[in-house]
Length: 105
Image 1 (tube, rainbow, N blue to C red):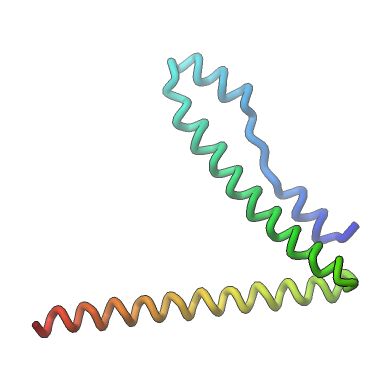
Image 2: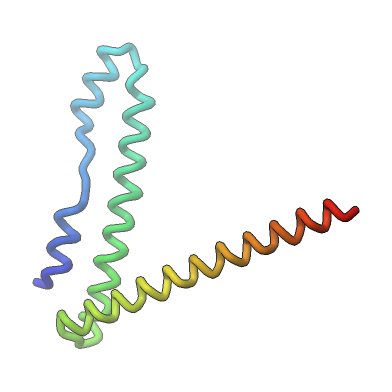
């Protein structure tokens, strides 16, 4: 099995529902808020991890070895980071132009 897949799989989080149920009963339901937040956070985290695992597996299914798949994933991550940076810059410029246009009126 790919080492990167194994590392990602070990990063998945679980929610101890029994513990949260007991704490919710003991606190008269107040702990439900914490339970929902923890469960939602773990679910989002696990979805991101699963997406990364699928990304690696997609390259592996294309016949790449572990090193090639890892290189492609790193390139994709760098490209995504660059795209996010560019999007933030564009949004900031639009906001600045909008604020300047409002100030000149």
